[in-house]
Image (cartoon, rainbow over all chains, first blue to last red; front, side, top):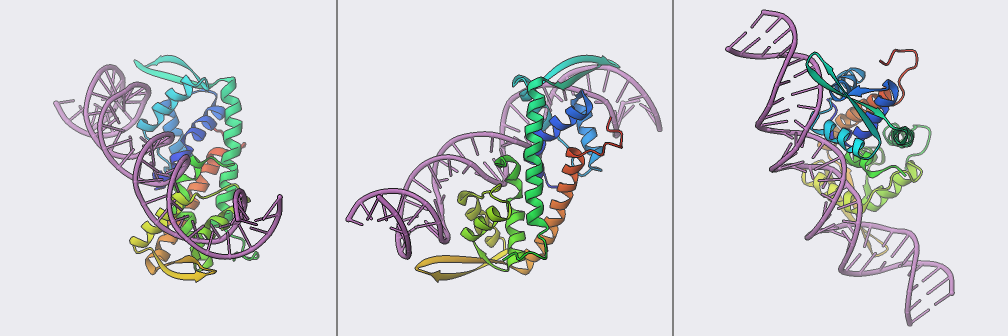
Length: 114
Length: 114
DNA sequence: TTGCAATATATAAGTAACTTAAATATACCA
DNA sequence: TGGTATATTTAAGTTACTTATATATTGCAA
């Protein structure tokens, strides 16, 4: 529904925010949660998600716990203290981004645009 | 201020929307308008903007008129009828994108998130 | 009169964040 | 036995940019 070009740069922020809200999640879970929250408008691909999770872990932003559920491995990710700081920063950027887009997309009719 | 990764996919939509609002603009003008509207939070680079304008023109989305102002060339861009249709579509996508991001970034505290 | 900032456009080369595709493995239902 | 859902991995390719450089005029200040 929403073209991937738009979503591209937001992946990291989305992942971090979900982990902040939910405490811990595994990769597959994250994709379903995003789909659910956005009513199917955003679907993360595994080829994008897992490498990002690995990167964030190696950067010390996320930590993992592996668990076995029904003979399937689940790798739970959660924020480190560094991760918590990063979310705060990323969310601030994201809100500024959304506000900026809205100023362009929904210009106030009362204000002269030209 | 806002990292370029976030803005990346939105460039075309931003350009098209500004042209819809303003009728016609030249490239340099577009960069200044975006900077003004977003209070400096979004700055378009010429290396991104001009190739996008050329592409949109060759796709029949934009048309041009060259004018001379103070011995400087200004190439004014405006929407073709194809361009007007495209803006409508792109703005719809953009609004869905913003709504989706807001659902993730500002989860309603009353609704269970987990 | 030199030199910088603003105005105005163009484009080649490089990069990063993805997409696409293929692989592996289990559970469950028809 | 065959498809759907669950769960993760990673290599190769793409694309929309960034970075850097080039060109040219105006106008202001040192």
